[in-house]
Length: 200
Image (cartoon, rainbow, N blue to C red):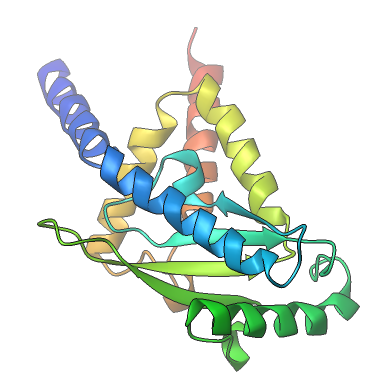
């Protein structure tokens, strides 16, 4: 039993190590953030682009989507202020034009989807870049995740293994009935918290 658990532990760690971003992918992600912010500031000088989601907390899979939010005083948080939805959509349409990206559509009114070519190196591909505007919830969620991950190093490898299992079963996309990384994070956190309470 102990030997089997040791093998499982090593395999989980191997998965986590494989998903560790290298210098090139980190540089690509940072360049995308800078480019989105540069384009956004042609529309609003105070615009700031921030990573959120898996990329922001180090729980991304290989070739994971990049989630960005643009914050500016020109557009309020549409999740708190319904009247901000129209300015948000207008801003996204203008930003999409500057990024040569697909504009928001009816089923995805608060998001722009762009694509970034990873490069010519072997294994480099095209990453989807999802851009929201004026929605601060993702940043707050990322900060919460970082706080708990600093206390529980086990969260990252366990979540990554679960993400891979779901991906293999085509259950990794929320819009098709799958679970988000944030949901998996809370499942793992709840499990670890319960485990701590049961241990002497």
